[in-house]
Structures are given as structure tokens and as C-alpha cells.
Length: 76
Image 1 (cartoon, rainbow, N blue to C red):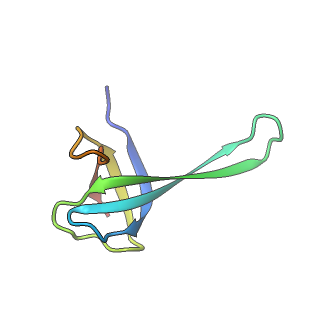
Image 2: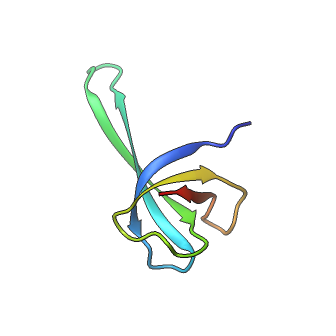
Image 3: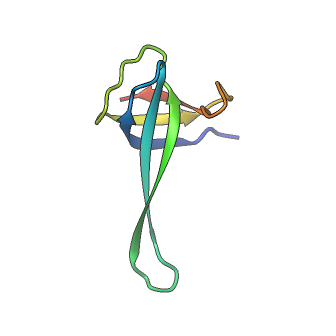
């Protein structure tokens, strides 16, 4: 099964080797036909602490690295 890749923005880099990434998805509401914005935060592994708040990054699914981390940053 292919690994999912998401685009998002770093909202926190306070922890060691971890960044919090905010991912926004847009979809059309089935009844109202209005475009709805929905956001979700993911915790991603950042090996060298290279990404800072505000950076646009791509994250990819991976094997669990800790209790909450199931994603890793692949590129800026």
C-alpha cells in the first residue's frame, strides 16, 4: 500500500526532533454545495531540527516513532 503524502505548515518546533504540522483540506459540502475548509494537526519526525515555524513542508506516513508520531518530514 502506498504511503500518503500531505502538504502543510509547521505550527510548532518546540520539541526535539518533532514538528507539529497543520494540514488543511477543502471539500464541497454534500448538501449545501459550499466549499468547507477542515484542518488537522499531525506530529512529524524532523531528524535534524531543520524546520521552523511557518515553513511549508511535505510529510509522509511511516512506522510509529513514538506514541504520537506516525509521520516524517520528507522535504520543504
